[in-house]
Length: 159
Image 1 (cartoon, rainbow, N blue to C red):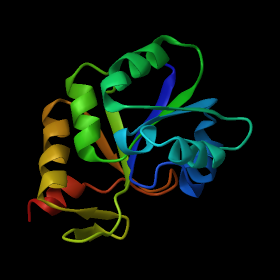
Image 2: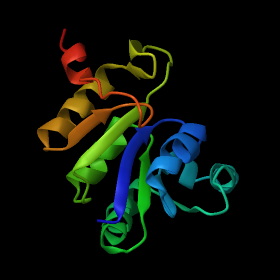
Image 3: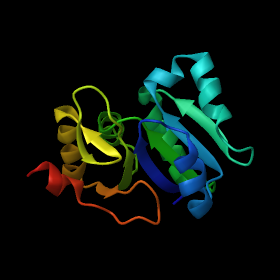
């Protein structure tokens, strides 16, 4: 399989993505799934500018993501898929994207979100979609960096 990591990270491309994970998994391309970013030329340019020169990048809207992800799945290029939110990941996977495991590594503080871990803040919608992803059979791996241990966040959410 050419998708070597699928991740939820609301910051999209940044140091943990390119350096922390990138140096361990060595992607040749990163696919960003984001309606927000894809609709703005300057945001696309800014997002892709954060990639090192040896990693290619592409940004797609949610309604283009299933086709783009499934194409990556059959390509021979080691690729990394980034989602902004659990809702986006759920919608794309529910609609047929071939992703069976999802790293959840960056859901940061914002209004009305509660802290679960220092890098995971959720609201009720996030909780719903994380549980819905699990119910689809997606294995969820809650880690900010590859050397850290997976934490069972869903158990913490149900307390």
